[in-house]
Length: 317
Image (cartoon, rainbow, N blue to C red):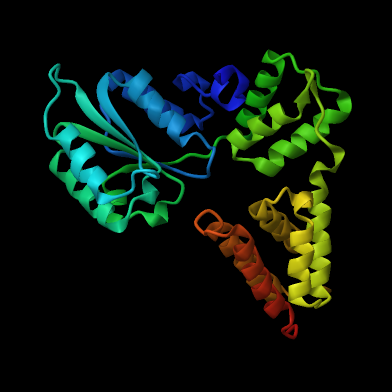
């Protein structure tokens, strides 16, 4: 089944497969030699390799006994009291280190995080915790302070090399005109390598890469949206315009906010004063940050557009 899912087929299976900065790679090579780790916390953007690295540590680098828990689906305090406690409160028969791999632990409830902190402290003599999180700020301080932290950002060159390797291995033909399209795709989705690989598979038809030329139409759409905002068009008409054109940005409101951020950043003083630009960029940064945690992505995007509209209606200094 995984042969048909490139993200699974090409998921890293060992440390050499991972796209890491050299300092991170060196650290885990040292772990392999010493067979010792502190509590670890991997955080960063989705698709950047946090879960893959955690699984490689327990499967390929360490000689250990481990328990994997996806804490986005098991986020309650009972998970800590039952599964985690039951696993760590006894020593392994063969004397191996016990490791709890808590994936997406930023989804844990506050009460569950409090219980986890106590378990980490109480059983540190015979167990270690490897935690992953998209948003480190959603974790309580006592958990963060007990872990060695790694922000995982795969180098751009490594992402490009991996994509080229996958394309060659899958015998995908790339015409000259497609090279620029591939480069733009990688730059747009970076550092979400998982999303990039999914898109490459999506646009590889009959072993030929065919990324649509209008893939970057999102940039044109963000400029049109910016023109409507600066011309002080009615904000409710603007929302209708955004909703009616979801296909132009693939219903990806986070990508739309990112493109709008770049459009406004490149705008000149004739349209925005420096003070206005700073305020608008902060609004967009906040909207991008909230995107992963809100229930309705479109409402979050519209709320950001309302705030931007209010700033643009201010008189320039």
